[in-house]
Image 1 (spheres, rainbow, N blue to C red):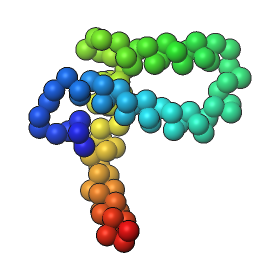
Image 2 (cartoon, rainbow, N blue to C red):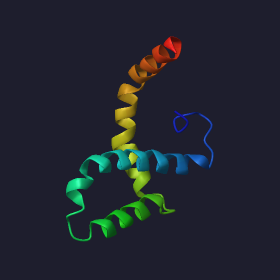
Image 3 (cartoon, rainbow, N blue to C red):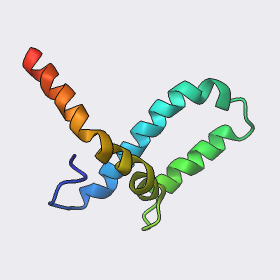
Length: 91
């Protein structure tokens, strides 16, 4: 939600990176059992994370967030807010 706020500052770049890194880490936790068998998997993972951190306009975190994560977030954010609101009132 902080990324989509109206007040844009320098933190947007790093917030986007950490969102992409979090999604990547969750996906990797399920697929790591199979992926680590591939040659140069860890080198590819390192290059992927460097691409996501690169200080250029076409870095990986911006590309992945704008094309994959943001559309999914905008589609489902209201349902997630409702569930979290219900959990907050029950707690």
